[in-house]
Image (cartoon, rainbow, N blue to C red; front, side, top):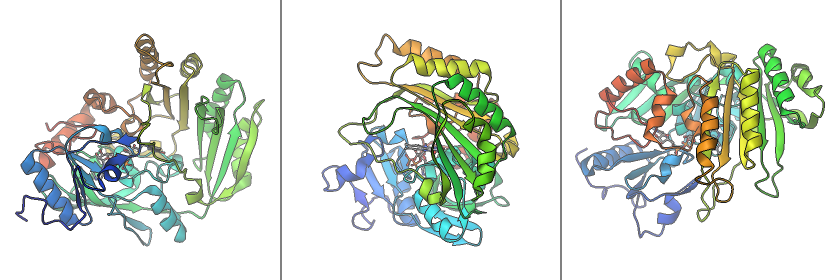
Length: 441
Ligand SMILES: Cc1cc2nc3c(=O)[nH]c(=O)nc-3n(C[C@H](O)[C@H](O)[C@H](O)COP(=O)(O)OP(=O)(O)OC[C@H]3O[C@@H](n4cnc5c(N)ncnc54)[C@H](O)[C@@H]3O)c2cc1C
């Protein structure tokens, strides 16, 4: 392959400003981007051509899987859109997934085969970005992160080489793909090990008014709970007249044993003010949320806050998190139980930080004029920073920040050093820099 123009690509593959499809092609989940050119790759060869072109033209590359990250907002560069690489193929308990597929499509295909996989909670989110960053979903305590199910991949390097990444041939690269982000190449196919799954028990509970008490009960309950159970606590402000504000606990139990799920959740159900909105058996694809993309004219607001991985949800941490939420009218508080299979994976087995964490916590105030301004923003950020200081790293996928400094807060120094050495081997010129970027060592 010596062609360094994009002209030999099939019609419709290259989209540029002025083309009829330009506006549709540059829209991503939370806004509308301003790249220099978009290549909608339909084959591995299209990917190789696009990378050669980007390298020759010195264009930064934004690899787009499901388009849910904030990287779509960074102007300029070549957006390599993988949406057409969306094949999902089941082979026994292995599932081969195209680099541009979404989790909804994967869950549907797996359920046809009585299988499931640890993913994220939203159907439209891309397998690519979520897996490469880690992937926290409803099965995180039962089966670990999405990245923990990854057993192989087909990857196109910055040089345009196509590599079959397997444990025996490229162990360092496979390690890096399990949480090191999109730094190392374009994954055109992910290979995952799936698990038998027919259905889940899903429950949504009103959480009452005493957030501190409820969170202490949640913590104590989850410390003893079987790993089939994963819970989320969420407290949202009234943002949309059609969406209920307030605090909820959502729970997912792997399997259809409603009695076992109810027994595991009994201490939470017994808390004063907790109400049952939903409790029943559903299919796994059915519990994945549909979250519509933002109206391009009204991009999603930013957040002032952050996320962290907490080894212990101490009374002090609960107090700080609830106070953060109560002090900022337009803020969100989100907690997800960890532990179980997530914690079985040794820290150095993947780049993902905080394997000792029992809870993931995220809080942020919407950065909307009238609610947050230049006077209040620093204090809100400082109160979050004090919470983050209690944690053990942060999860890059759950931040809308594209700040280059963030990556050093994500990984411990020894992980960063190992990622940087692998980066130097596979992408020494840092073509893949539109991500939580690991600079080549
Ligand atoms: C509504 C919503 C719900 C979410 N829910 C969850 C959740 O439940 N659990 C969770 O863990 N996270 C969740 N996230 C965060 C999500 O994991 C990240 O936003 C992730 O980056 C999305 O991946 P994507 O492929 O859709 O994004 P994209 O913007 O397409 O990609 C993000 C980055 O990933 C890399 N990338 C993507 N695909 C490839 C590929 N095939 N090869 C190489 N690099 C690639 C690129 O570096 C790119 O910059 C959610 C986000 C949103 C907006």
